[in-house]
Image (cartoon, rainbow, N blue to C red):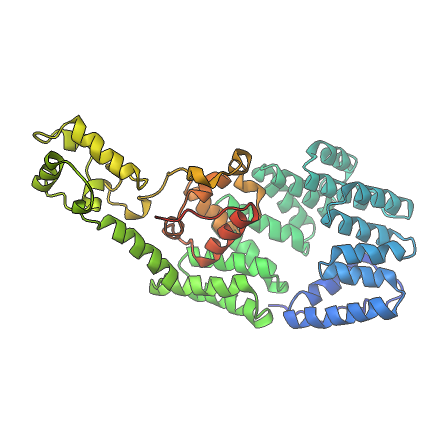
Length: 435
């Protein structure tokens, strides 16, 4: 792995800051928590003492403090660097019209047409105005097979629209033109991973993290290693992240997940959920109020628990002597009170017992919220892949699942579970709990 060294310039003392200076400083600062903290202290101090507003604004942007960054950049002397960086920060704060205005000013201050149009396309992409993004990029068509930035920006727009194959082709072209273009390399690996080409994704992630201590890239590579059963390599990736970012919660949880995969150990919360399910299945039939005929028939059929009842179908019950529609309806009503049904366990897949149940009516949730697509929410590749395995597409379908059901999916661990909880909490919901 190539060492991440000090950037060539000190952002706060450089008289003529370039976008390359800002990017190099960002890569260095965000390569470890300690560097982030030190840089944050310096940026805050410079904000008080210095009138180098471009450097201060760029510093805040590196720290993801985009509102403060924009405030400082507005005070900076006019330059293409000021307006390009300002447009980026305004895009991050969702002030899209102002971002587009800043890009027009960047052009007037000497920014080249390719930079400006690619930046505009990025603003339109985030706005989901793909028609305008296409128009902005059409003005740069003469850069085909020439500019890595053009093909990368085009790929991002195609990826946002789900045109993964075309996006992959453009990312490939960007990397061929400029093998050091880190963003193109990362997104190429990311989309290949989404498309299921795990070996190719792994190769590109490995190339990417050789020279970039990029947390998401390293953790995504760890997911691929774990999926392939290469646990030592996965742990190695996690240790690398924790060495430079010891408080990264995703890495901490992921390390626990991998350990669980190796040892088949389940934490207390998972065991509690499993025990709750088992208690329901082991409930004696004698606990329910049934007619003498129904009780006698079930006893003769050796159906003694709720779990036994869930393993038999309606047809099997009705085929038994003296077991009629009246007894069948009596049992079905009892099961309905617990959101259960006959035959649920006929296939022996205990983890699927409670799947496909609708969200309980008493939640009183706006149907529009329940129908929101899960694609609207940011999540890790691993979590998205697990949701695809469950064929879940909406918030309502996710909220109808229990923790136990999600944790029963291959490679769906505590990290992914935390992501799902956070998504549901953001819209005022939670995972379904068993009575």
